[in-house]
Length: 358
Image 1 (cartoon, rainbow, N blue to C red):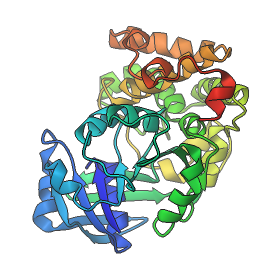
Image 2: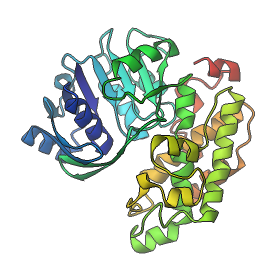
Image 3: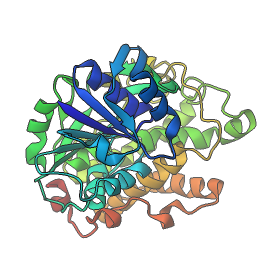
Image 4: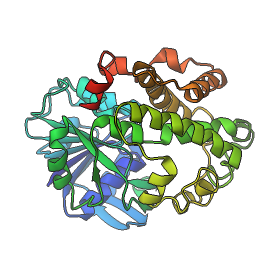
């Protein structure tokens, strides 16, 4: 299959490598402000990987020319932080063809909706099939340009939903050789809410804010950053996320439970479960507070959850408190910025029943 991957960070590089390793012809694109990894992959003709999956994956094209990257594409992965989804959608505006499939991975709260709007596709237009996953399928780091370390390729517990959902099964079949453990979700709201990064990352970051600033992040984020009290904060936020799902008729699993299914965690609890999780061992804290663990996970994740909760009548005092504290600490108003909300996604006027049918 001809596969294009938009996004050459650690996640996109892992997707490109894995697809190439399975015999697909892969083309990799990123914007020209991110040249190093793209250039090295082009120079060496592919991607080196070590860890849970390893070897060398040949890449047919690695560059900044979107038309060259999309050449003959049957399947397009959009892989990056939440703030990259709309720019990638705008980059392919008017360039997609009927019959192509696009997968936004991970959703990062409404990724498929955001991509469709940016790419000029109507909500229920299925001439181009668009889907999203609940999380990235790897715990992975870019160790140097052209090389990744894959700590874990998920064993289960990554959900996929198409928009509209009638195409979910067909898309799962399309990607089954590379992702046989991918599971169907009821809707893109289930994939959006099942992603717990906004629940975990801001809670741990704010609880360790002084340590991050004073040491430049010289500690282990999960092993040393998640005490039992921090775990109680994560749990409180998680309960609010689950309550929003319940109101929509969507089953959202507690994060430690999905973490066990995915292979990240051994214990389904919010304290030692994170500290002793094999999938999190050795992961360092971020070097500064100005990082996606706040800017993405609060600005795009928690704000979305808060506004969605209020839209369907679920109060989110813990989530709102974290948004407010993060805004004070970062000297910006994440809620006022409204980077990703039901309003920005065009679903603010939907009832709970209408949202559940997306």
